[in-house]
Amino acid sequence: MVGRSSPRMKPADALLRAFIELHPEDAARAIEASDADEAARFFASLPDRVAISLLDRLQPHVAADLLRHARAEQAARLLDAIEPQTASAIVEHLETEQREAVLVALPETKARALRVLAEYPAETAGGMMETKVAALPLDLTVQQAIAAIRKAPREALYYLYVTKRNGELAGVLSMRDLLLALPRDPIEPLVRRDVLSVPATMPAEEVVDLMSERKFLAMPVVDIDRKLLGVIKYDEALQAGILEGFEDLQRIVGAGGDERALSPVSTVVVRRLPWLLVNLATAFLAAAVVGLFENIIAQVTALAVLLPVVSGQGGNSGSQSLAVVMRGLAMREVIPGAAGRVIRKELLAALVNGLAVAVVTAVAVYVWSRSIPLALVIGLAMVVNMTAAAVSGTVIPLVLRAMGRDPAQSAAIFLTTVTDIVGFASFLGFAMLFMRWLT
Image 1 (cartoon, rainbow, N blue to C red):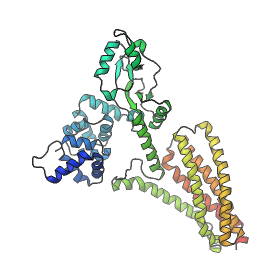
Image 2 (image 1 turned 120 degrees about the vertical axis):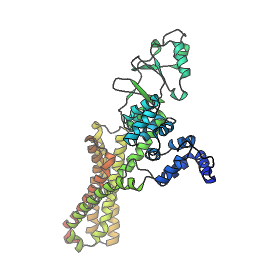
Image 3 (image 1 turned 30 degrees about the horizontal axis):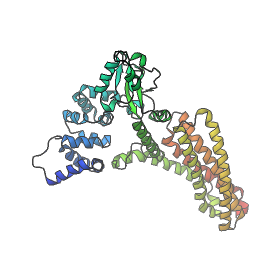
Image 4 (image 1 turned 180 degrees about the horizontal axis):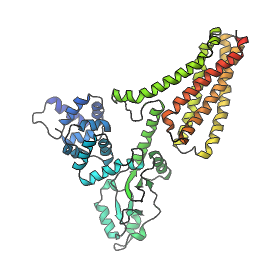
């Protein structure tokens, strides 16, 4: 069991434990890549000190798997030693029965903190916050406040927040004002009431933007009644923003936002397969468009050779617009009133780029085929497809956001469908119009 070490430890086990203590991050990655049953057996043999170091670095779902066979008291002992945010993420992956048993076995303060964190999704301010926060009652004297600060954990001291009797955030106290005041003076006149706070339900990306804009080291988190729940440190918010960016990138290409390099195969398949099937359906749709022009392609086989050129350039143009708009949405640069300007800018840029690329492409095709009509067809198709792709890459995420959907989840799939269909239809459509000169 966890926490018990054998008096006759094998040399290999001693070596493994030494490795974990020296390189806990590497050990955590190795365990995540190991067989689940073997990892659980090995974890059960570790002393608490080593097991805690591992739990703090493992992916939450892996850590939960390692604790599934542990008694509630053992799991609670380990979870009590790590930060509430990490412990909460692990507890959320436990089965309901074990989760409740562990919460009962935990010290009351820690269990209360985990229950508060569990009320809010990880991508909100409530899910990011630390529940350890130094808060001074509003009715203290200066001397009492200084004594309370000395007793507070160092990691809980960011700003000196002040609360009313009911826990409502009253304001923030300057350390300078506190030290310059007389010991028997009340702190209430020293409190700055215009403290900025965020609701626990605020999306994480908005918190990151706000803290970056205001240059705050920490941000208090409050509930609907403005009661102080916790605090978000700037470095934690920044890390959350970076992770959110990577998760958005994964979702754009159809991988799950929570997928990791060493995620189990079953998790990878479940996350990726649905979007692969959706992509397959859109590919058949594009193929159906090509099928409508089967007779034309049979007469001018060069069209089949050039189809990927048109669709590929359209995809590139659309992806550029999509990336810029996605960034604008994430950074709050694209607000509802600015959507029209963004669309016009992307449309104009796409027309200019489309004309430039069309000229280069037409010249290259003419050199290759010695056919002016074919060069003209691909040039016209290039302008149409690149323009349509850029506009689609701009409009699709805006529409998805307006509908309350996550643009990162499906914008790329819709964009691929549009660029393929418009590219094939425009190229083969122009070929049909110029057919008498192509044959």
